[in-house]
Amino acid sequence: MTLSIATWNINSVRLRMPLVSDFLVRFQPDILCLQETKCPNDLFPVKAFEALGYGHMAMHGQKGYHGVATLSRLPLTELVDRRDYCGVGDARHLSVVFTHGLKRIRLHNFYVPAGGDEPDRTINKKFGHKLDFLEEMKLLHAEADAGVSSILVGDLNVAPLEHDVWSHKQLLKIVSHTPIETEGLTAIMTGGAWVDLMRQHTPSPEKLYTWWSYRAKDWEAADRGRRLDHIWSSADLSAHLRQVDIIKEARGWERPSDHVPVIATFDL
Image 1 (cartoon, rainbow, N blue to C red):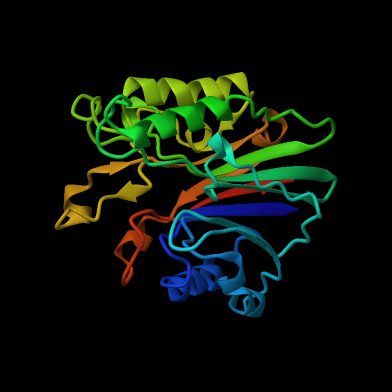
Image 2 (image 1 turned 90 degrees about the horizontal axis):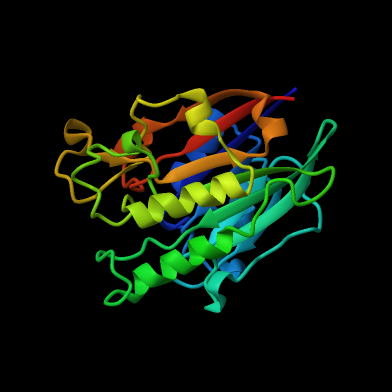
């Protein structure tokens, strides 16, 4: 029995609904987690997802900014958690519980703040917000609930490893790859007993990217990417990982997001 979970920062779900629809028809993940939906819950395209077979949904949205949503072909329980990280009212987290075979699984969907341009919280409040958000995430543990496995996905806006960016040396002072961010994300992972499934499947030193800037005139030729999108799990699920697919071609689709979908497939 397989289970496939996809994550994708879509950068406006209503604007890019045709891309999402094509993706779901072609790849058919069991669950799709979207970030940066930029859509309040009452305007979310529910009927479009129902028509595609994703009739089980949970949303945490707001007008024009942020927002996360989890769309599923599998039933979701009523145990939906929407945490207000840093207490500022942003829609950046959502978790649901579902059952697949003999496994009961809590799935976290995150959109971590980007952090602005200057990696100095004394002059850049956005960077301070990001660091505080990462600090609060350290309380999240993959084995928090007895008998419940865990998966964590989303745009975490940190490329933690040397080979998660196109140039480790040139990006050490660039937000998303500064030491304080990478060390913070690593501390969340190790302290929470999370397994980095993408690097389990494709270990370093192979390069892995999920994001290519809109600023590049030819993103594919330059290939100056970063791995900002992640899929983690509790150790019991990591043993069942079959493959991880980064859908790089999506960056070249018409009117694309600057992030591409990532799909993890398990044999359970």
